[in-house]
Length: 178
Length: 459
Image 1: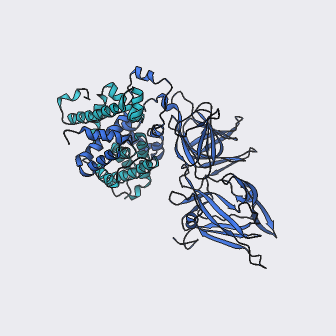
Image 2: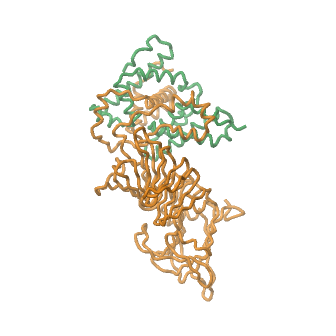
Image 3: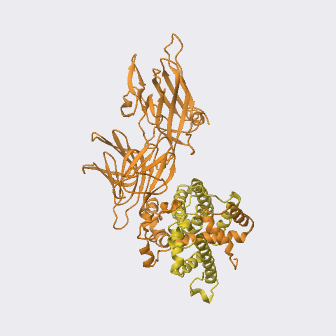
């Protein structure tokens, strides 16, 4: 039986972070990954007769996003991760119990809200504006290595914040440490 | 969960994101991801953080915003990504799903992720930029300066995609994008809300304007196209006509004088002649058969060649003209460029049959320019037959035959621009060429048939 279009859309929107993140992991460009997600949703709707169930939709979407992302990465001459590594990542991304649960997504957003202005600024430049670390360093008059170091610490701090959020830790209202 | 996410993997990740890993670092990252499940989990989390961070509303201190009002230094190494950035297009989802489904899904599921307002563009984002550059593409500023193709495209610049298989995409700050196909020329207006197609074909996905901004208006010699609601269109400018094909949305078309030529809606094609003549038709799928009736004066719209009758038999004969690709005069028959409709749809086993006659034997070509089935994609390629047009045996005035498959034309040794995309190929232009020698070529019949029992070569 062909799945309803709205069921497919609901599944994909619920898993949007998961699909977009896989595409972003390959393209290293969040906006391009958003475009890919958009294309995948439309392609899924056009291909809905082939889906065996809603679980199949997510697996199909991840594979479709990966292929489109790889095409883009090749066209931009980006060094891609080996296929066997991408297979493992895709497998992990497809795991329903993986790191992309809605609770985790909500926690991540709360933690992002709690970042210092300078950390938010840095993430914005990096991921929303798509600036390289070199460009960020020029804008902030810092060294490139310092930008890389700070970004790494922000990422780690965000993860620790999310872990505390999910663990109900009393320190959850603190600002994210860097 | 790993209770202590390691900083080293985060360091590798942020460099990987910039494509800035050394060979040793790349190997380290790949090895860790291949062998360590915790590293894969951390890598997934890092990527999700990047996506979520890009979704954040800008909350930038005034001081920082003020610092961006200075003229931007656009680094040459800045990735194309910053120009391709665009948010989820609500129109597409709504258009696809229809109102009912969208309404049922929209309020909860779509709301938070997709319809959040994008971050305010920085000054750097206000430039039109060029991306997806393939082949011979040039940008010349209004003052005649040749500009790099990986930087901003200032107002007044002219972008040219020369030669076969060249293409590029203009990315606008509001998310609109305009793909230029081969052999096309566009000129940006004095502001970035106008773009004139001087020659060739473009495919535009035009977004509704940002608040307080004007919508992108497209122009040709015969038309001015605008809409405040966004649209997807293909536009073809030839010497004597403009074709406006609308895939989605609706466009108000007017003459340069301001006279309205009407509205063109999704699925329609409007042809505007330089004499003011209008023809409106539905865009139909391209057929996998092509059997032009040479008894009709069909070459009227073709670029090169002429229709005539020799001994009461209708034929098409070449014209001596300057070929822009070879940069010299040649004897050619060349169709017009039917980008939107296409002449025929080809599979590898499609068969092409040409019945011809020449006064003397000599080398020649039959060439097809092909595109992908996605009318918005600027990718093109060539299918070529390179061989001898042979004179009929002495005492005979019979026609000679070329019978060749699309596959053989793709694989022809002389073909330097075979399509790099999969079938089907949509043939939008074809050429008979005898180079600089007038062989007295007469084309009496030309047809394309699909593979299989009903047509040409079985797959």
